[in-house]
Amino acid sequence: MLRAAGDFKGLPVAAVDGDIGSVRDLYFDDLTWTIRYLVVDTGTWLPGRQVLISPLSVGGAVTDKVTVNLTRAQVENSPPVEADKPVDRQQEETLSRYYNYRYYWEGPYRWGLLAYPGMPPVPAPVDGDPVVAEMAARERESAPGDPSLRSTRDVTGYYIAARDGDIGHVDDFLVDDRAWAIRYLIVDTRNWWPGKKVALSPEWIKTVSWADSRVHVDLQREEITAAPEYDPSRPFEREYETRLFEHYDRRKDLGRRKYWEWEER
Image 1 (cartoon, rainbow, N blue to C red):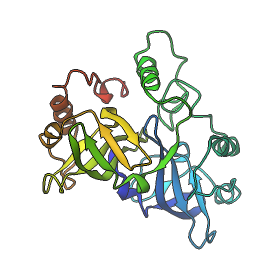
Image 2: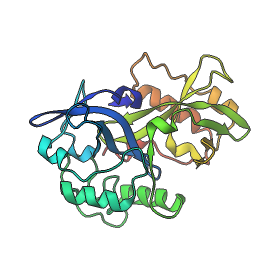
Image 3: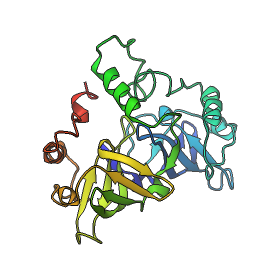
Image 4: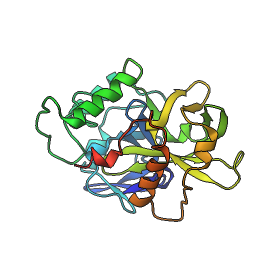
């Protein structure tokens, strides 16, 4: 299921023995565009404290609340992290050791040795595995070094820069709550193309200028405005995704397969 990142805000978060707070924000890594942590405001339970909860702890589908396979004591005694400041790899390692998570950055899949949170480790990859090849290709095309964690709240509002000029701004994100992948950026083009929103895959992003709050895509403005319109009042269905990819498939140099053809095997 694809869910707008904005819809997570305020969702109650429940441990196995009671509520622990509500979702305040989502942190994603800027290499794979995967949600790595829910920022949970603990409210009056632990006044003034926010905690980071990995999707690896989320149990089952997200509905009107987020249920995590943790106790309140585990959350209360978790290593302190200042959620309003950058989270570095050392802090992530500390959290992973505390919660007994495998490191998501050690392995060929989106979640290290896991294809999705909540699944048992997949068999060791073999040469020629298409998933491994796809993930390796992504890493080769990405900037060197560890990915940084970004806030969906902070990136909302970034300008979208096409090859021939700005075309809108990031209005929201669509998150696959099985893989916890950001599948699309929702772009509001009202300042250039009144009343229309479109969906852009992170696969079509060329670079992101974090300092300038600008997302550069290797597309013309006309290609984006001619794309199938995104209507937030309607279910986001595979038929729409197929039309969207087929629209951009006219650009043969994009060269990306539909994610559901290789991830959802």
